[in-house]
View 1: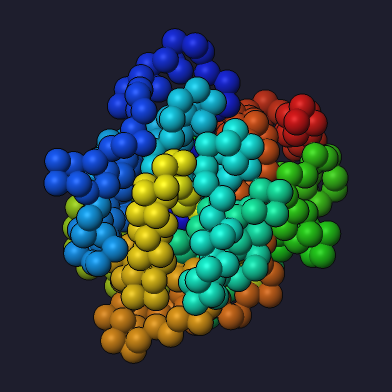
View 2: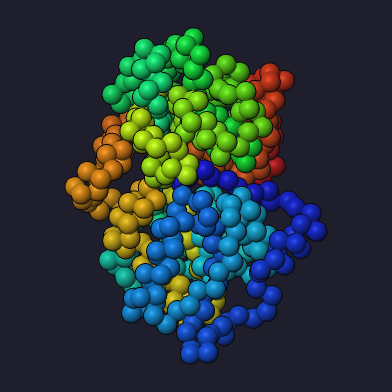
Length: 439
């Protein structure tokens, strides 16, 4: 969904105290009610400010309180403006504090961690009691958000990603973009060479904040490399990265970092790299549909930029497609649970899945929701996304969804070393292996 960031598990005691103490619940809130008897739901909200879904969630909270189930609910917000800071706080609260009553997913799967700690509510009975609600989700979506056979997270969208490209830059380089995808990575690299020869930087990449863009390129390199690579990128928590298919992909990733991206990619953050794309300084960027509203935002992109953007799958007809981490309920108070579950049902209703698509570019988690023609006409890029998905020959996960979190940290920390040629692909993979086997 959007740039995904995870946090470090190990923090100093001082940092833990600072973050947990800042706005966390420090006393029993099971009886939280307003003077007129409304149930108070505590929420830590990172969908604020310039976040891609800020407007949508502002609508969602307001609209819920106008429903029969939500009219007796008040929200008490703590706002954290980045997913990185949000995830740090949630992880610390899991280990040493009280979670908010509604726990938004921050792009990483912490279901097992929170459930094992006894900090979140088993939602299985509520799904079983409402067959219509349960039918909104595929079994794989619910299994991904389960721990020991019980569902703790409710997915609110489907995560996919592909490549955005700048039509004007392709035209300037004399390139014609493929209708769907480059047949091979060799074809893709040949296009990169053509762009570079014309003085155009081919791709956006990053390393900081866990290297979201580089992660997507890397996942695609592995996931489209045949049956073995595709299986690897659809496996949760692999422990051996010193296998030929991963080492070969690492060599190609190093090639991209060294030759085809901006000079500030090593050490750079996603936001900066996205700005390069918005400003027409980079020809291609991998990401998901949540980015589409940004193309029309004059606060992020030049006026008319939306019309310059095209979409293609990863080379070899590849597309990241993973079940998404779900929103959870972090209270054991019956009244709060009832109110929080009602909010999750409202959030995942067919109407609001379409609203999320329209306002935030979030793909509906339900496969049986029909997108109206009016939305396709108003947002042709989104229509292209919906059409291109069915043409993917390879679908695969990505490391921030499927790898151990300390491995993801190592991936990000070692990317600059890879970019500068200080380590080989084999050494990079060995470091990933060593981190994974610590688990």
